[in-house]
Amino acid sequence: MSSASEKVVTTAKTRAKRSVGRPKQVSMEQIFAAAATIGLGNLTLQAVAEALGVTPPALYRHVQGREDLIAKFVKHVVERYPAPEYHGEGWAHWATLYARALMDVYGAVPGLADYSIRRTDTGHNILNRHEISIKAAKDSGFNEVSAFYATRAIIEFVAGWVARHERRNVFERELKVHPDVEFKTHVLEETGDDYPNLKAAVKAVTQLSASHRFEFTLRALIAGLESTMAAEAASKTKN
Image 1 (cartoon, rainbow, N blue to C red):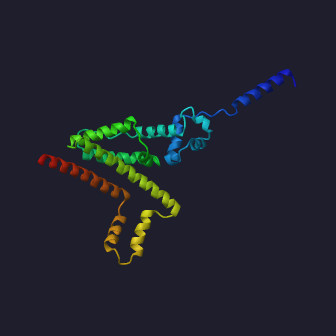
Image 2: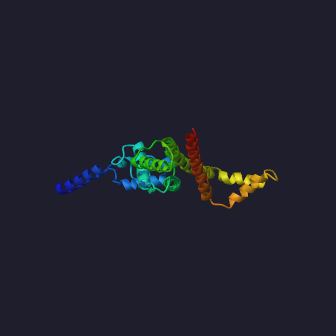
Image 3: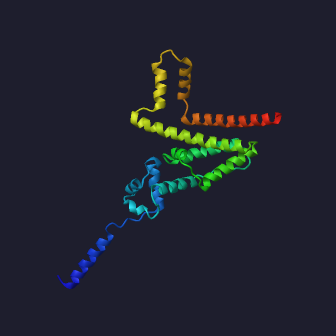
């Protein structure tokens, strides 16, 4: 082999060695897209890397570790769903829109609702939602304490609702039957003439959509909060 040929081969080998182990470049948007598919419950650097066809080191250009990945992903999701605008229409109306918006946020990524229950998020969008809700509640006659409690009640109601729904879906995959269906089937088919009122109620709700129950419970929660606030205000006036 000539010296020129040897030089070409040596150069090729050197380049090949340099490329070995060099992580493929990925964007933050690609990472977020993979994370949305994986869900927060199973979100790890390894899972994202496998979804993108790269090695974990390729992700360290954007995130410092799993906790940083989760924090940035949650912030990314929340920022895509801003709180409804408030124009003085009253807390009950705004809270209804807010609860529906939260359903969209938590429904966008599996595990996000459960994460919000377990962890504290103090990002701007989260704090701004609290700010708007408390202002709307105070405009409707709530004091600072009742406005804060009412705000948290809506958030925790929706987060708990979605987290419960997701966990029951997991049970359905494991047990091959959804717990709600299991309960209704037992009442309708295995209780004979016992529990006539329960059976009639189960028959009635079976005809309704899942969203109907959410909307009904949400309205009851908001009405109860407003009623409690009004009762407390009346009590203070008497005293």
